[in-house]
Amino acid sequence: MKPLRMFISGVGGTGKSFLIEAIKCLVDDIWHPKSGEIMCAIVAPTGIAAFNVGGLTIHRLFQLPIEHEGKTAGYWALSKEAQKRIKMTLKNLKIIIVDEVSMVSNLNLAYLHMRLEDIFGTDEWFGSKNILFVGDLLQLPPVNGRPVFKKISNKLVKTRLGVANAVNIWKETVEYDELTINERQKGDKTFFKMLDSVRHGSLTDETIDTLKSRVFKVSIQEKYKELESEGRNPPICLFSKVDACQKINELMLESLETEKIELACVDVVDESGSTAKFDKKQEKKLEKLKDQPSKTAGLETVLSLAVGCRAMLRRNIDVTVGLVNGAIGTGLSLDTAIIDLSTDVFGDGMAYVALSRLVICALMKLTG
Image (cartoon, rainbow, N blue to C red; front, top):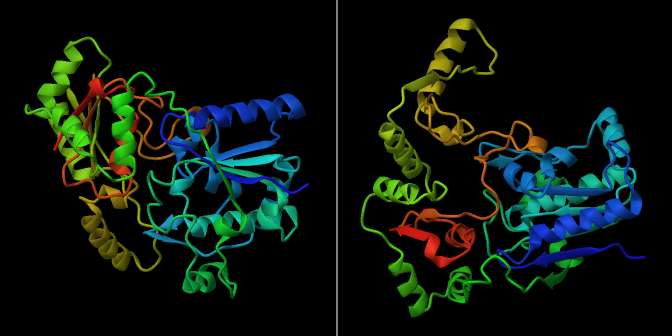
C-alpha cells in the first residue's frame, strides 16, 4: 500500500490541533505503543507549537541541522550510536505529523526526508512512512528560508544537501485536503468574514471599517488597566517588533508597586587563543551584543522582574512539560488581546495569525 503523504490545511479555528489529537488517540488505540516507543510522531518547527499539540520540535526528534546566525548548517549523517538510538525509538513508527508546516522551510523538508531515508534504510520518500503535514500556508512563513512548496535553489542543493539535482519535494509527493468548518469564530460570522479577508490580503471596505472601530486612542497601559479592572483575564499585548515589546514591558513593570529585582546575565564566549587575545575579543563581542537580545536567544543583559509581573520563557527548556520559548501559560485562543497593527507589521500572515487567536471581534483592541 502506498504511504500517506498529505497536507491538511484550514483557517485558524477549523480544528487542526483537534485532528492531530484524534489521529494520535486512534494510533494508540489500535497499536498500543509501549513506554518510550513512538508510533505517532508529532513534531513542529518551534517549541511552543510542538507543546500545543503534545509533540517535540522537528529538530529535536529527528536531530536535524539547526540554524545559527541566520544560516542553516549543511546536512550531516548521524553517528552510529545516535542512529541506533533513534532507530530503536522509531522502529514501530506508523505516522509522522508535522504541524505548523508554513514555518518549515523547503531546506528543512529536504533534511527531514534525508534523515528518514537514513533511519529506515530506504531511498523512498520520507523513509516510506506515512506523513501528514498540517497548517495554513497563508500564516507565518519560515523565519529564514523559503516555504516548503518552493523548489530548492541549485546553490543550496550543492552546498547544503551535497547532491547534484534540485527537486520540488512538496510538489512531487504531497496531496491536499482541507478542513472547512470554523469552530473558533462560529458565533461571530462578521468576525469570521473579516479574518478571511485579512488572511487573503484583500481587505474589503467593511473589513477596514471593522478594524478601525476597534482602535482605541488612550495609551496601551491605560487600556490594559481598564480591561483588567473589568474582571477579565489580563489581556495579552501582541507586537510585531521586539523593541516595541521591550518598551511596553518596561512601562508595565514601572507601573507595579512591588519591589523590582534585577538579574544580571553571565556571559561566556566559546573561543580559543591566548588569554589576552581572548579577553579583548570577548569584550568587543559582548559590547556589540549588549542591546541585541535577538542575537542572544532572547536573553537580556539585565533582566528586570517584580512580584505581580508576568514572565515569558525565551528558550526551550523542556518541551514535554511546556517549558518552551513563548510559554506564559495561555492556550490556543485568547480571551482578550491588545494588538499593534501599525506599520511595524512586516511578515506575511503576521496580522492574521494574531487576529485569528481571538474568539469574537468584541474582544479585540487595536493600536496603529
